[in-house]
Image (tube, rainbow, N blue to C red; front, top):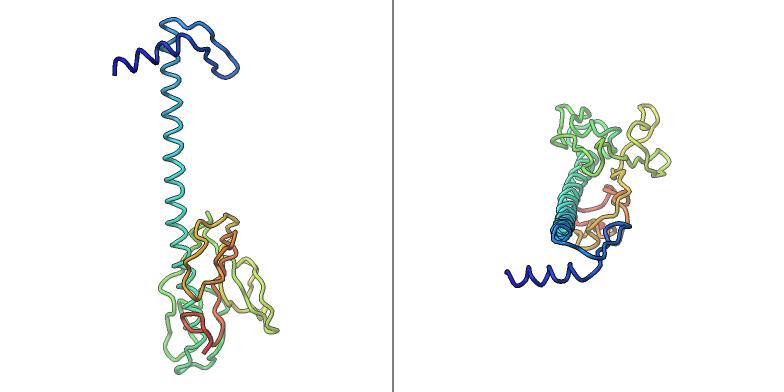
Amino acid sequence: MMLRVEVMKLVYLELPIVIGNVRFMKVNEKGFTLAFVVITLLFIGAGMAAVGKIWSKAIQREKEEELLFRGDQIRKAIESYYNDSKNCRHPNMYPSSLEDLLKDKRCLSVQRHLRKLYKDPMTLDGEWELIPVTPEGDVKGVPSSSLQPGTGMRIKGVRSKSEKEPLKKKGFPEIYKNFEGKMRYRDWEFIFTPGQTQQGAKK
């Protein structure tokens, strides 16, 4: 250990040191100590930055998995709402809001297709972008605030509003195979299509 310190000391004493735009040529004992501290702090800073980057990626992966889970839960709830015709007056209908998935009042007894209203984990406000289907069958993405009662539009699915690039690019379930290679979380659309099974195949 002492030998390593002596070698480093010789290097610092002989070689010029550049800190910012300042160039130091001859370094005395105090200068060596200062340079040693600065270099040490630089290494510590670089190490902390690397750890921070790894931690950030880990958090993103966790949110990513939560997005897949929550989006899938909403899609399944829309499927359940659409297919639930037992004692219902209006079967085979998409919900007009996410709240309809919590309390389906079409039936003689209130049905619950979704346990709770999940938020979008990828955005600060947690608001999903809804994917409605109009009476004409046109599908387009709009913010939930734009889907007002009386417009005749109903919800076919949801997607995140995040423009961030996903870490996950492959290995999706069959029903979400179209997520592979997508460059934005916003491109992950959790949509239910009539005749679609849980695996994404047509009946």
